[in-house]
Image (cartoon, rainbow, N blue to C red):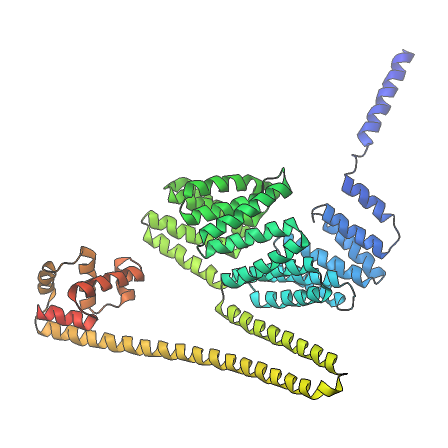
Length: 525
């Protein structure tokens, strides 16, 4: 009995021990416990921020602890570093407005700091977030500030990174030649740096830009180079983003089967890595490729999946892409009403992304930057020659001449763009006036036609004798009734370009040049 009693007590103690035992700490939490024991110092702040990076930006509590520690010891660099880290976390969660706020707060402290590298990285990060909310003008401004600092520091790694960001600004504004210029400039620096990761990223960006300009052979060349490097750098993880771009290339080339093959390779990896923007993009583009193969049900499911994800992360580019895909889907199904509704939504989102004013602002900022750069060179030249008394006068007048020329160029450009805009406004007014006059003449002719007996029955009889297609005859009838191109397109459920094409054929077949001549021709038959 005594043995049994002792055994029961042993079991009870064992159960109590295991039931109250704490689960083992993860490696990250274990390191965190060690860091917390450190005294408050800049080193502790750095370690807490680095630990958040180690946790894949998934532990914002570490950054809050770092920020509090930095504030307590008034570590300016630490405060800036913490706000920059908070910006990175917000960007990871697609909260770009919040990330912009944090980066700007970081810059307030970095202006008092001597950490140039951190300031360049913060400016670059700010440029990325501004790009994501389609504020290209501000993004360009901060990128250029980062580039100037990196250039002054002669840091080619940072220079290459910033140039990549500037290239992406021009991709956003659909100015692909400028984008290619900056990507290639960045690539040249990455070759100097022997940075394979930077080369891989530039190859992908250059390839994507060539897709947009329909230069598919060049696009394929650069994307394959990017794919080759990605396989080398990221193995055993498949290069999902490159697969997505290869799918995009073949979709644009019209090879939908090959496009689907690459999208199928990309999608599971992107899901696993939780790169939601690319997941949405891949679903939508795969849906479009399936639509090209008339796989309607599968296509619709992919487009809808992509749209749901895009809306959750507020990705305007992908929302616009999804609605454009829906336009194509409904058009293939001949549901033109739904296609028109989707088209209106797509245009709404596209207009918010590609802003003409933003383009003009970028151009003006670019000019200001180039002028500023020239002024700095002039000042440097003047300073270097200040001690050479014999050449001082010549240098002074040289500086004045360059300033005058620079000012003249700026004034010329300003006047040129102003006159160009005024000319366009004037042309638009003249066209509107011509259209109104045109409509009045058509109405007058229509009245004369009725007076002379050119009614619908007579018109139908005359149309039978003409070598016109059924659609061309329908368009011709509407022309004689005084309808405009827009009204004809709406009435016949076709695009304005199709209307223009039919009218061009009518003019050619009737040997006339305008609507008035068309009506006169009908009267003379």
